[in-house]
Image (cartoon, rainbow, N blue to C red; front, top):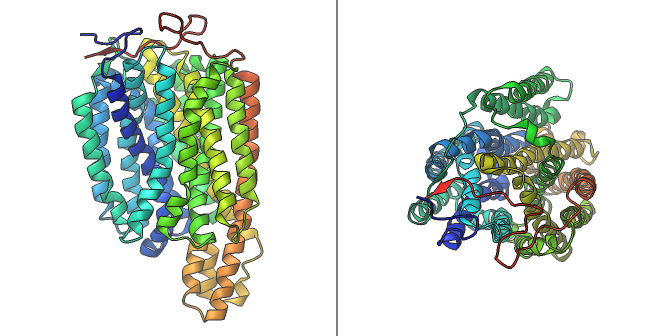
Length: 526
């Protein structure tokens, strides 16, 4: 039975949006919340810089390639059911992670969390667009995007509060009751939705994309540790190229492709997807490195480090609703370009910060970045969803999430590798001045350098700690200069290739004007 339509929407659509937004916060916070735990992971797991990258990146590394397959599964079996099952997988993986004792065990369980997250995320956006009429859909997407951005700061704040008093396991235990609450609310509030003619699952394409992205991210993470000419690194990068080329070939010629590449011939869709990936490459890099900067560089405790990112979350909440209003008056490309330019100004400011920078300018930069992010993301999401018809709406939602998460996985790998390279090449670390064991620890990461400094004579330990912080700040500056260039490239792409007309406004009957149609609702609900 159909209970919603393009003009009326679901009668409980705002309650549905609230539950779906909670699911989004859970998925996003799972990524960002662990960043504030990096020093604790160094202390409890003796994790190196590369191992920290693997622990953080394992989640999006699995999450991103599985999004399209999970979306197709939701189209076939029912999006609500797949979303609920994803919450169960996610909660179970968090329980297991609370008992992990090695970096690689934890990284593997983070990958399992990514499986659960991939089942949840595309269903939220697809169910949202099913529940809301076309005229209200942009506002609902803006709220969804605002909560996604807010979740990126809620995670570090919650983790910081826990780590101030408990071990790393607490970060995983807290996820279990939250996921259980989302599961119960989803069962009560969210309707079922599936396509009448679902596509067949493309398991081969999902496997090739998982292998390709995994090898690419792995090669980028290991390159600073092993060297860019190391056989393992070269093998990973070559294998990634072959797997991704095979994926592209299968998607072009297969009978039931996961990703209809012909859709990417749409200039607006291709540009919005690429720009979203570039933006999230920077966002995830900012979260990964920013958490380390607060604790390793500035000496903040976990709670203070988590609270320090709140200006970003608040600015996203302000910028996301404004994006929809601006897109009705200005060209969508101009709105996105303006948001990315504001974010680029913030990353340029971060490139000039050091270990002695006071918090007010940092807070201002975070707020500017959050406002720019909040302004850009809803318009990019709308541009990605717009070309997809009813039968492919789950794929459109998954493509939006894929762009975000693939960019995020590459962000931790790329930005982390730039940081590690700059840290070691800075010249501040002079191994001849310290005992061999302390020098080796300092070479691995700033976190291990600070731990090693605690076991040296006071004057020598202070010198090593200061040198490590200076080296970290040098590497961080390289990261944010790169981030600024990436964001400005995205701004130019958006300005030149996204629609040059404002988004449609609702007409007198409440429906969107037909000149630029919004996507129809995704499937039958009831």
